[in-house]
Image (cartoon, rainbow, N blue to C red; front, side, top):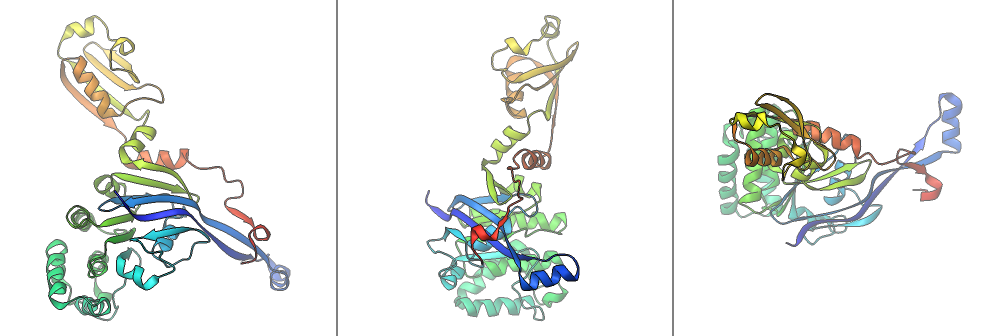
Length: 355
């Protein structure tokens, strides 16, 4: 599958002036300013194919929004290159704008004092969307997002959920192949969040759009993304399927509680070490026919793989699973994958040039 979004060694360095404390420090920074450079994004490389949804995750300040701003053409990379739908975003911003849609959760592309429907009409004229096609798309978006209930209301009077639903529709009016979503559901209630998730699944699965999503909502990640890129301190520290992240960072967090249907199994004792297919599974404790299994070592299987091995070996009368949710798994990933950063990404401007 050919890549629709490509980031090749993307880096972005911001230069700032350090001001000392007090009057003397202010005068020193005015006469002989000390310039430092902070690397917000460092050597980021990944690609996304057509009809895929990629979740770009990381803690606050990790470099997610800066990466998206380079991919949308808002920022020029310090080094490296971005290619989106065959266009280098910062070199041809107008052409790139026609290829992408973007929603930033804290901002809107709608006109604040106009009803949402009039904003849609203005965007239709800006992008040159034929009237018949525009009406067909608005009917589709209304069916998925229920826009007609409030699209005659001024944007300033819309709730957050209503405004973001309108922003989603506005970003797709010109039928772009690529959509960037930077925390689009922040602050929404659970009902509207699920409505937005259904809309995004429809765009990926039915419309074959490529979506790059940043979010702190792990429920959103679990329900939408198959692949995750984890970024921290501006560097990619993990790129792979969501199940791989669970496998790597959920070790030691699950238990399978089993009640055996055949008392003979319990009477003869249970030793996972000598059972075929039980590598990485430990018997935590046993009370008669009731057994508790858990992971054993760094190569422990997922809870679902362990469950299959247990059911294949024993006759089970009852069982229960205990597994940490995705938020706990991602927290473990953030903490364990922090790269060494003695200077916290700050370097002397003399080595970077005065920018």
